[in-house]
Length: 160
Image (cartoon, rainbow, N blue to C red; front, side, top):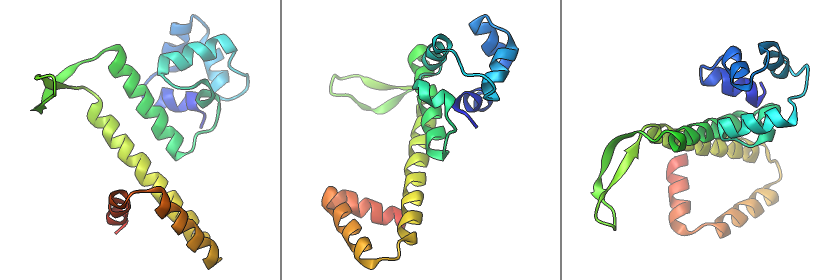
């Protein structure tokens, strides 16, 4: 599934609504989704801006992590374009006021958690496929050297 198809389906949009926004025939959008024709550069730029994602995401087949990233960026763009405060954080900011909570922020936090979980699962799967113990040890030492102790502790707790 290409990024364009993913964004349209995952956000309950329609081919018709996208075609209307771009003032083109819905058949053109359908051909782009089917990869029968390439999305013209001018429309690619408009769509990327509209969804808050990089142009290359619209034309490539997305893996699980990329789908989550695209969704996170799309929600972030919606918050940026139409901020809707749904409450306030209980803690005061250093400026003395309460931090607003925007509609969609909880969903973004959940997606970030899913991204981390998927990356961890992918890493563990690749790590488990290693057969050479020397490479495993080198990899673990390299990872340990990159993180502070608290981060390592958190990762171990997450994996347990």
